[in-house]
Every structure is written in structure tokens, then in C-alpha cells.
Amino acid sequence: MTTTDEPAVTRSPRAAIKARNLRIDNWRRGPILTVLGITAWVAYATFRVFYQGDYWVADYHYLTPFYSPCVSDGCVPDSAHFGRFLPDHPLLPYAALSLPFLLAFRLTCYYYRKAYYRSFWLSPPACAVPDGHAKYTGETRFPLIGQNLHRYFFYLAVAISLINTYDAILAFRSPDGFGLGLGNLVLTANVVLLWCYTLGCHSCRHVMGGRLKHFSKHPVRYRLWTISSALNGRHMMWAWITLASLALTDFYVMAVAAGWITDLRFVG
Image 1 (cartoon, rainbow, N blue to C red):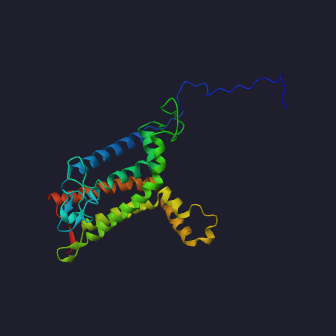
Image 2: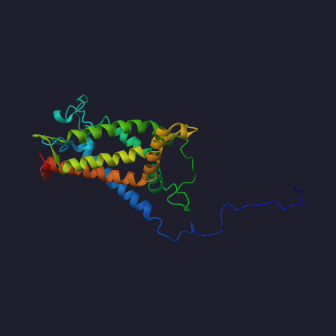
């Protein structure tokens, strides 16, 4: 019981200290490196997407993932595995059918949200560091409420990963039949890494094991859920590795297509 004689309890909103936080480690390093890494990748990807050249190696059927699927009228006919039906315009990427969905999938990814919220928006920049904004509304208002569409972008990302896999398989063709070169290894490794990132997505994990009351009655889904969960535990790693593998794969195809280097051939 309480009585009117008891003193009122007052609570200070914050400890009476002058410093904004008491962290003594270099907590700024993470956000700074994230800004530099993402900015560098976006700059390179933007240049390559609108460069519209050196994306296809006809001799070995190498197609960079930045241009897949190539559906513009400006695409080399042999590189357009699914037809050419978009107009050829300097401001319209050759892979305009897939790039917006891949960008949306990455932007709404749970890890990337954390990365750019902290590094670009300082919301908050690090644990135990005050938010850089006066108020916080979360993902309840436009445009951040659109982050909830991530589960739907996941299905589109799966479709695009299947297309990238198809491209990598076609690349094993050479003028003499089956062929194997360094480019094949690069394309295949990139596809494997993309699948590790995509299948480790939180939405994929929910698709595999969500809304089940008894895993024992669904052994296949339980197995798929455990695989997705294992990949999900390294989701940040896959997110960064795939950014690197995409850029490396694109640069290798560009270098071969431009004649800067010759593809190292093992077979064919």
C-alpha cells in the first residue's frame, strides 16, 4: 500500500554526466568503414550499369551479373538469353528488369538496414551511443514502412539467382563444346556465394520453418530451416562477401571482354 505521506519518486532521464557516452573504444571505425565500403561499391556499380559495354565475352559465353538478364534492344543478341524487349536508351540499364528488385532486396535486408541506419543516418551510430536524431519513429511511417516488403523481394531475388545460375551453366560452352576457364570458376563461385546470402535471408528462414507448431511432423522443412539458420548466422559476412564477389566477377568479365587480359583456359 502507498500513503500520501510517502515521498514522490523522481527519476532523472539521464545520468548527470557531461559526456554524450562513456565508450572509450574506437566505435566510429565501424560506421566510417561501412560508409566507405558501401559508397565505393555503389559508385563502381553505377558506373558499370550505365557504361553499357564490355559485359559479354562471346567466345566463352561470359555474361556479367550486372547485365543479367540482358533484355534491352541494345544487348548483343547472344547475350540476351530471355529476349530483347526494352528500348535501348543511355539512361535505361540493359538489365533494367532485375536491377531494381535486387536493389530493393538489398536495401530492405535486415543486415543492410542495420548497416546504413548506423553509418549513414546515425540512428544510432553504435551501441550505447545516443541517436543522431531528435526523435525516433522506427519503420512505422513512409518511406521506412516499405521495409516490410522485404519478404516479397526475397522471392524475386530467388528468381534472379536462378537466372544467374543459368548464365553460369551456359558459360561452360566454348567454340569446341564444353569449356572450362578461370572465368567459369569466377562465375560459379559468385553464384554459390549469392545463394549463401539469399538462402540465409531472414525471410527465407521464415519460409522454411515459420508457422509450424511441430518440427517433428515436417522433417524436410526442419532440415531446410536448419540449413537456412546456419547461413543466417553468417548473414553479415555473406552480405559483404557477395558485394565483393559481384564487383570482382563483373571486373573480370569486363577485363576479358575489353581485351585487357586473356581468359586462362583449362579445357576448350
